[in-house]
Length: 161
Image 1 (cartoon, rainbow, N blue to C red):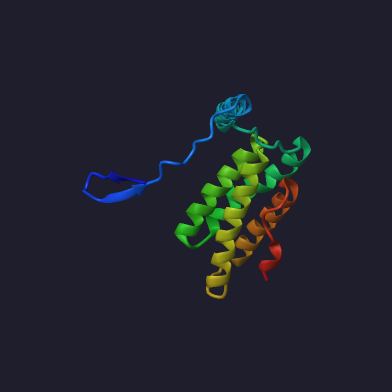
Image 2: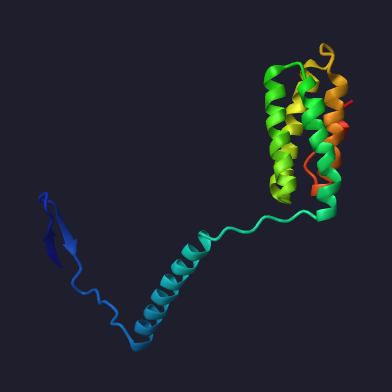
């Protein structure tokens, strides 16, 4: 056995009898196939990463059925919410929900129903006994429930008691 000298002066034994397996025709072609598959996979995954899936479309009849309820909640009921921060956020989310319904974008509509419903639920549970706008909040929640049924879920009205 001979000694190998490293850069910092350390000496380590080196095995001279180690044989390196020589590449066979099969191992070379397998390596080539592996490389081609790796490159092809990288190209396919990069190409698919940029693709945006189209939103799920709402049924036109369902969109037409819930739109007046959401519009009424935005124009008549939400401005009666006493808490300014909650009122502004609910007005914004109801407007975005209205736009999602008009565009028949079910995914955006479900998201806005969950967000607005969560805000109203928190407002109702925290300040429910001290505010006088409980009927308006309950009516908006009923509208959101009706919309959630039409767009495929996202809001549970049973929490409003």
